[in-house]
Structures are given as C-alpha cells and as structure tokens.
Image 1: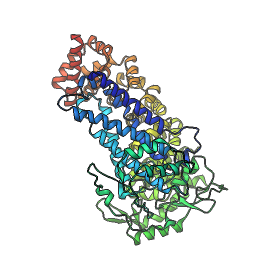
Image 2: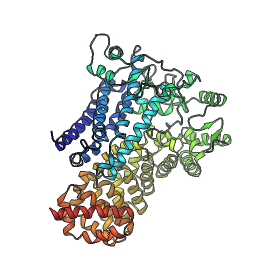
Image 3: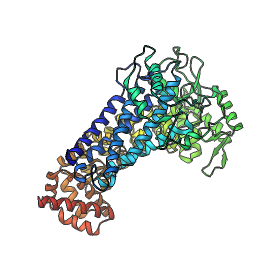
Image 4: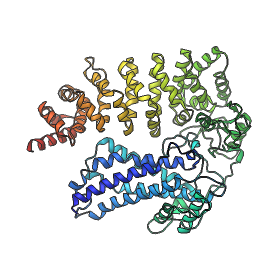
Amino acid sequence: MAGGEESLVTSVFLLDLVRQVCVVGTPGAGDKNNNNNVFRKDCMDLVRRVSLLTHFLEEISGQLGSLNALGSCSSSSKEINWSSDLVAALQSAKNLLSLAGIFQSTNDSDSAAKKIATLFHSVTWKLEKSLANIPYDQFDISEEVQEQVALVRAQLRRATERYGSKNSREISFAFAQPIEKDGDQSPMGNRLTRSRHIENSGGVSNKVAENIQTAVSGSNGSKDHSAYQVASELNVVDGGEKDSLGNKSGEDLKKHDTLQIPDDFLCPISLELMRDPVIVATGQTYERSYIQRWIDTGNSTCPKTQQKLEHLTLTPNYVLRSLITQWCAEHKVEQPTGLANGRIKKSDGSFRDVSGDIAPIQAIVRKLSSRLIEDRRAAVSEVRSLSKRSTDNRILIAGAGAIPVLVNLLTSEDTSIQENAVTSILNLSIYENNKALIMLAGAVPSIVQVLRAGSVEARENAAATLFSLSLADENKIIIGASGAIPALVELLENGSTRGKKDAATALFNLCIYQGNKGRAVRAGIITALLKMLTDSRNCMVDEALTILSVLASNQEAKVAIVKASTIPVLIDLLRTGLPRNKENAAAILLSLCKRDPENLACMSRLGAVIPLTELAKNGTERAKRKATSMLEHLRRLQQN
C-alpha cells in the first residue's frame, strides 16, 4: 500500500475509533441503571477527553500522506509508533468503557470495582503517553486545535495523578461527583484520603478478569470478551501500574495515610469530609451541595435509607459542623474551605484569625431566608457588599451556606433582590473553590434566566458571572448546553456598552470549547460580530476580531463568516486597522483560506496581496507569521 493511502486509512481508522469510544462510553437515555453506575463520571470524563481529539484528527487527516508522517526514512519507527500507540490506547479505552459501563454496585462487587478503578488509571496513562509522542511540529494545525490538544493532555496527566495518588480510589455515586476544574483541587480544597484503604491484589490476569466479569454480570457464568481483552492489554500488577521494565512507580510505593476520619464526619454520598452538613427529613446528614444536587435531579428519597422524604427542607447540622471543626484543629487537618478553627490559611502558609467575623456573617446569611422581604432585601445587599471586599469574606460567606440560598433568590420578582443576588454570586465566584459550589447548587439555569429577562444591571452581571464560571473547563460544556449562548448573543447585539463587553468576554471564553462554536453560529453571532466590525464608533472591533479568530477554525462558522461577506471587511482592516486588529484579521483570513481555494481566490481578487506584504514586513511577530503563510498560499494559487 502506498504511503499516502496507508496514512489516509490510518487517519480514517483513528477517527472511526474515537467515534466508537464516544458511542460505547455515552450512556443511553433510556438506561434506567445509568445513575446507579459508580463509574458513570469516570466514563463520561474519559469520553469527553477522547471526543476532543476529533478536531485534531480531522485537521491532520489530509496531511499524513504529504508529510510522510507514517513512513519517513529518517524517523519512521518513531512516527509509526505514535499512531499504533494511539490506536492501542483508544482500543483499551473502548474496551474499558464497555466493561465499566455495565458495572453495577453490589455488596459483593467491591473487589471488582477496585480493579476497574485501577484500569481507569492505566488507560488514562496510556492515552496521555500516546498523545505525548505525536510529532505535532510536522502538522499544520490551527492554534485553537493546538490549544485543545494541549488541554486534553493536561487533563489526562492530572487525571492520571489523581487515579494513582496513594494507589487508592474513592468510589462514589455518579450524582455525587463534584464539577471541578480537571486536576485542580475539589470545591472543598485538598481531598482527604478516606480511611478505608484498597487492598493490594494479585496481577490482573484472565482469572481476575473472570472475577470482574462475574461481579458485573452475576454468577450465571456469562463472560464479556471485552473484560478479558482489557485485562490482557493493560499491564497492571499488584494494584499499581508498572513501567516498561516492570518496576512499580514511586507513586504506587507510597504508604497510605493512616489518619482515621470518623465515619460520621464523611458525607454518605461523596465519602468526603463534610464542610456544610445538613439534615434531611429521615434524620440522615449529608454535605449540602451533594444532597441538594441529588434533590435537584428529581429524587425524593434518602440516598442512604431509600426512604421517601416527607419534605425537602435541609436543616444545618451545627453540632456536627462544630465537631468536625474541632477534630480538624486537633489533628492539624486543613478544612476543605481553608478555614480551620476560626482561622484562614494565607498563601504564605500562615493563618489569619477571622473568628470574630464568622458569627456576624452567619447571621446575615440566615436572614437571606427570612419570610420578610425587607430582611431578605437588606441581607442580600449586605452579602453583595461583603463579598466584594475580600477573599476572606468570600470564603466565610460560602462556608455559611449562602450559595444555595442566593441561587434561589435569582428567581425573585423583586428587582433589587435579583440584582444583588446575581452580583453576590459573581463576587463569590472570584474565589476559585466557590466556582464548583455555585455549579453544584444548579445556578446556571437561573443565571441564564436573569440574563434573558433581568434588569440592565442584572443582565450585565449575569454575563460576567457566566464568564467567571466558564474559566473552569468542564463548566464551558455545561454552560454551553444550558441555553446561555443565544442569550449572550442577544446581549451582544442589544445590550448596554458594558453589557456588550461582558457578553463578548463570556462568548469568547465559551467558544474556546469546540462544541460551543456551532451553538454560537446558530445563535446568530456572526451577524452581531460583523455589525461590531463595521460600527463607525469603532469601540468593539478588538472584541469582535478576537471572537472571530476563535470561531474561524470551525467549518460551520467558516461558511457563515464567508456568507456574511466578512472577507472584504477583514481585508480593509489589514490596511487601516490598529496593529492588534491587523494581526487578528490576518489570522482569521488564514483560517478561512486553508484547504479552501474559493476563499483564497476571493481574497486575491479583493487585493489582499499588498496589505499582506506590508504586514509581513512591519507587523507584530504573530502578524508577520500569519501574513507570510497567507502570501505563500496565494503564490501557490497563482502557480496552479
């Protein structure tokens, strides 16, 4: 087979394999057992990361043959290995998802669950290593896709570290997983290792695979071939991963933490130390954010006892919170919020005494739930003011349980309460750990509603809040799927000057995620951006060009940009724009002309050569690179 044909087959096979992984790992809508699968979040995280490789593989599919990336004489071995390694890693991911996707927790399945968790560690490691070996410098990849691949690699690297940390795995219910920035601290700060340690086991052999399958499918003797395939492909021994020489990694050799956390201090859902324990109708205590999420997903039973909840009121367990605080102080354990025994840990490791502020803030937070609207109005105004002043206040306000209450106030018919509530959430989101708490409280739908129908100030601050929350990668996906993008585009078109800027910032950040680009195009963002480019006041050209430069790598966006007659406007900006504008205009034009001779010919007819030549000589460094590349494309067009 010729090198070009082999390359094409390989690229098509890789794309097909990625799609197979996504299909196998995506739970069916009608699967009633889906929410009971303890590995549901692991599966969804793995699928999400693999799916992000689609755009990279699509971009390089036409380049493999011409670059001879799979068969060059000088480095063929290395370059063949990267593709075969990636195929092997994706196949392992597919097989593992098949196995984990049908796993159901039972009293006898702990051993199997622990081994599957170890397989997630190994597959994640294999994927990260295979991506690290790809010769990226040999491909012409857009900056957006480069950033996307870098993001996937970073997420896989951090996930590998988490899976391998102390050779343990905390198994929790799917609904209980916190939405967090991949690899960063959870919303409760550094996770505390559970005292129930996973025992080391023998090597994962066919016998172990059989044991896993028995636990998954029951004792009827049926065997899923994928279980054997996963076990045989993955080099996992003694519960830890071996390197190529068979040596266990240093991470696997670390001893478990021997600190025993009292079971009563652990949330039954998350299995983590509680920071805001609340009591439900059955008398059971849970971490507020997790039980609130359980209820918000439509459940009306107690997760631990399965009894029906007579009411959904969550009562703070102040006694238990006090005991947890006392225990943390005695054992020198930092509480999840960074707050311990009335002190907040500073960045330099020292502590600041805030004990005098705790009680007053708790009193204000309690008034947020007052039956009197005057009390609620005064309390939310005070929370807004306090949350603006300092990080300490943001920690203390969140620690007092204000976030779920503020989310409820977003739907208030009182304009003042709604404005102050959304602004308070914006202020609280500045502290990184609070972002996850806000997401867990289900804030996004209510923020979007404020964005659509709130006052001018409320809409501006709702857009700014979405931007702040979208700084966490997972949140980009959630916010994009919530209906926020059409509301942001509408604000971009018709909002106040500040509202337009807030909307532009949020849209730029959301559109970094490839899946949101199509949503933005369908919401009419191209028309709005073109208006900004041609506005005689020239006040938001920078913002419009920056967003367009992110969108231009998306095929749907490219079609819409060309259809809106944006190319002549961009070429005019090459002549008359500010240096930064010229740079972005050149970048957008380059994206539009790649593998598109019609657009390239259009640019040639419109006289792009002269301003591009000038830019290649006198522009910024990035502008020079883009202009030079454009001129090379135009020269090739003329030669053909």
